[in-house]
Length: 77
Length: 366
Image 1 (cartoon, rainbow over the protein chains, first blue to last red):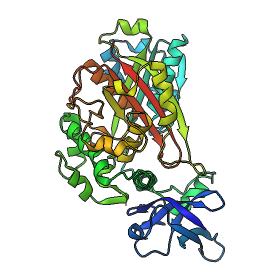
Image 2: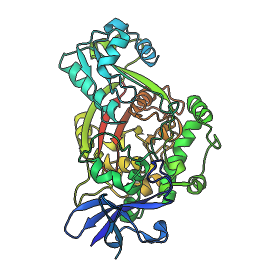
Image 3: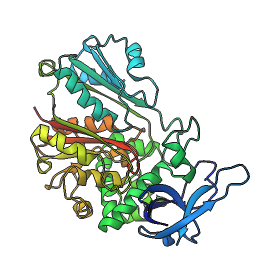
């Protein structure tokens, strides 16, 4: 579990891995254990409306497929 | 060309240069290459690179070396063809090349762009202090007003095919498209080409220069990075400013012109607060009443050349802060502040929301 410290919604990225995603949220999340991590906030309809500073979030492992690292992302708790 | 103009402005000969300062950032030339390019045999060679703030760091270092007697005439140079190279600086995202470091392997997978990095600071500023988009927009509006008075800025905006090379209103900023929420297009600097050069000399040399010199009377530098529990809205300027103002023996209230690195509206907001022009968190009210323009009696005027928002930003803008601060103190600006006696150039390099460096250079009239 953690809390969104701050976030942005990327409307335009030219990096090939992100260019076609549509708007996505990048955030710093303060984990309850005390660490601040950069991550994505997923599981929201509209990231601009649905993500706020102070939002409580829970860990959501993002599976990238066989042989790839799973990425720790967060979704509203 | 910039180096030649700077030396001509000072009335100094090429052979008198005995110290070179170049970031090597954009053109990969640096203190090593620039000596060969110009045929110098310098006694001091410096390639300090801390992003766009490099030139305030270099100016401060040049002063220290001159004071120590290591050199007499330092030449700071910069040139970039960022626009012609079609570099996507703000929206490119991670490069994904090179070895993994403690930086990129914890940040690259999330797709944060450079603009997004600054946008995260703006998000938190709005949440923590209640700062509004309207207040942020005043920074863009004041800067554009100065740009429209500067023929070189007008030419740059025209060449870069700005939509509407004209004065803008708060509503124009609020209606421009989102690039990375909550930052909109007119809160982001342009990507241009550009170059500049500055000569810093010992007092004995400066006294005999063609033009009246301006003096560096205080300097300070610091870094800031992400920390568990840290406050992302506080820049390295908060640490660098007391050093500079302490050395100069002046207060922010006395400053006539503030050349604050305007990569984005949020950068200016943080620097105004962290340098002590108002209390932390009160920057919104400070900029929101339109008191940043050159002909407002309340000090300071900001970015009177048109800034990175509306005149040029070739990737590392810090040298232009020193140039316009000097113009103001010589009475040569296109948006001249009446009777300007004290100016601050504050560079902010790296990325505001993660790791960055800030240097403050305080300049005074003769």
